[in-house]
Amino acid sequence: METETKLETTKENDSIKNKLSIPMAIVVAGVIIAGAIYFSSITPTAKIEQKPENLLENVEPITEIDHIRGNINAPIKIVEYSDTECPFCKMFHATMKQIIDEYGENVAWIYRHSPIDGLHPKARKEAEATECANELGGNNKFWEYIDRIYEVTPSNNGLDPKELSNIALYIGLNVTDFNNCLNNNKYEQHIDKDLQNANATGGGGTPWSILIAKDNTKYPINGALPYSKIKELIDFALK
Image 1 (cartoon, one colour):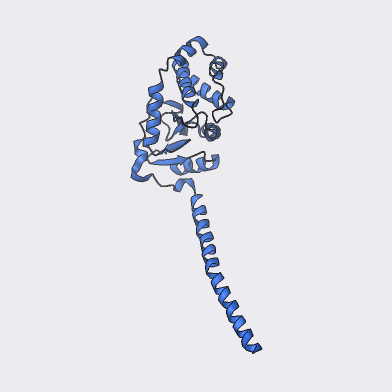
Image 2 (cartoon, rainbow, N blue to C red):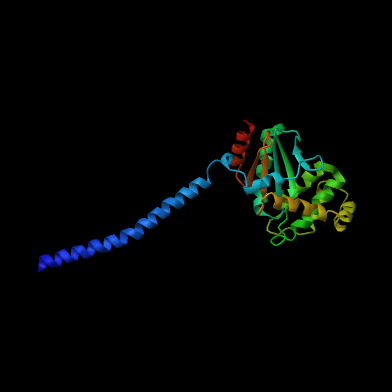
């Protein structure tokens, strides 16, 4: 009886182990699959495929009326759609400045507006302020102004609106003319046009950027990718 009892106990234990091993196997398989998905998501940026339905082709052509930092005829162009109150845009702005410093005439950076009104209602007026800076001082003042915004804003809708005039003064603009421009809301349609184009190209957040290679192939840059990833993609596109 003792032997039979031991056998029965052994069988019951084996049965329990088998029952436990099945869900454990499922869990392990899930971990493996999840790991595979994770590591595939961090494959080199240069291997990112284009957006479905070729949405990247909807990017508005780059012209001389764009805000361009670098050489308009550069073999690599990066069109960025950005929100001045987005903390990730602030990070990416610093990354792109580093890229331009390194690559010089080989990369052009094109800045377009994509304020997220639901999260950052101040960003739209800040975007208009950059356009007023451009009106009063040209492309160089546009970049000086937007550089300064990203330097002083705490992000997440934290910039005091009074700073807009202070920034204009800081970069040497006529503050009276600047305030008149800003109060006229004359660039609302321009901001909307940029925002609509960001959406048309597949942008669902900010920063959203599109790298246009010398053969006109387009690659998405979704989010504030680090400098190393942007560099990798540029080097790939320059080949």
